[in-house]
Length: 112
Length: 114
Image (cartoon, rainbow over all chains, first blue to last red; front, side, top):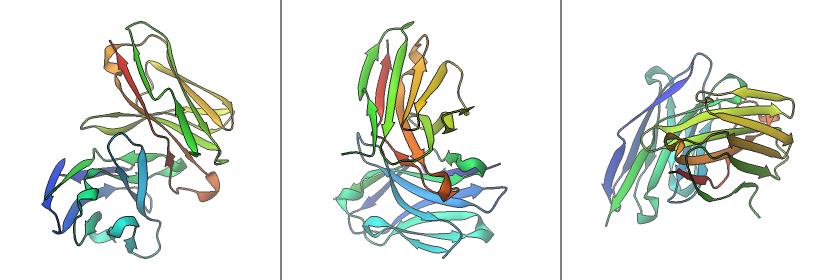
C-alpha cells in the first residue's frame, strides 16, 4: 500500500528565508514521488518528481527535494522564499497502476 | 490552449439534481482520473480509466458515476447531488507509456450543492 504524510498543514516563512515542507511516504514498491503546487483558483502544477534516478531532484522556481530511503522522506526545500511562492503544496506517491496517493497539503504563507 | 479542460468551471445546484462534469484532453493520453479536493483532506480519487473500456472505482466512488466517451473525454456524474458533495473537482490525465509517471491536471470545477 502507498500513502504520504505531510507534516504541518500551514507553514509561514519570511520573505528570503528557507522554505522546508515535509513529506514522508509509505510504499510497498519502489516509490515514485512528486511535489505539486496549487496557486489560488488554479489546478495542480508539477514542481518536481523522483523516479528512481538521482536522489536530489531539482524542480521549477528554485525548489528541490531529496529522496531519503532510510528516512522514507521526500522533503521540499527552497533556499530563499519569494512572495510568489505562497500557495498550497501537495506531496504524492505513485502506486501500481499509476494511481496517485496525495498528502493532505501544506499551505505556505510568505510574510513580507 | 489548455491541454486538459473542464466544464463547467463553476456550478451551483440544488440537492437531488443530476449534474455532469466534463473533461477533455488534447494530450493524447490513454489514462484519465477524477479527484475531489476538500480543505484539509487533499485530493481523493473518485474514478479512473486506463482506456475507453476500462473504468475503475477509486477511494470514494459512492454517489458518483463516470463515462469514458472517447479516449479524450471523461465525464463525471452525480446522479442525485447532496450537500456533502460540495467540493472542488479535478480531472487528470497520464500516459501509460510513462508507467508511474506524472499526472496532468485540469483547472478544476467548483461545485456547490445547496
